[in-house]
Length: 143
Image 1 (cartoon, rainbow, N blue to C red):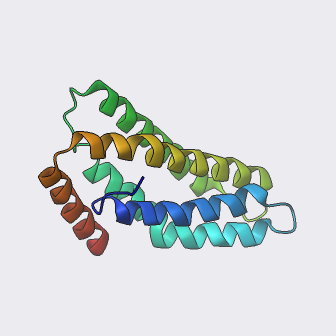
Image 2: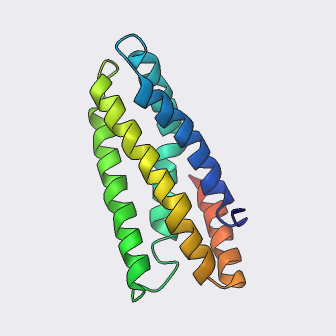
């Protein structure tokens, strides 16, 4: 399914996240420092800002009375918090930590792309989706 223009910037970040997650999950003792450096670079350029944009703009995109949406947003927030905590403790030689964070990042992106974003695209009217896209673009530019 083609992603809406409104969510395309977030999906582009997701593509980068999946590439980093793969490197992290495959890391061994020899490749761990390079995987760590790749994650740090991604996190500084995209990851941290991406979470902030999603939390600021997606959470309120649909009414809180939509229980399915509320559950999806809660999962997003919990996983973001867990990944932030893991990222803070991660060390260049922590093969297990790289694998854990890489797996969580992979699964999180898949959840958003396969469940959260399609639900939002299906339930927002075109004008609201376009407005959301403008707000996402502004936040991404300002971060």
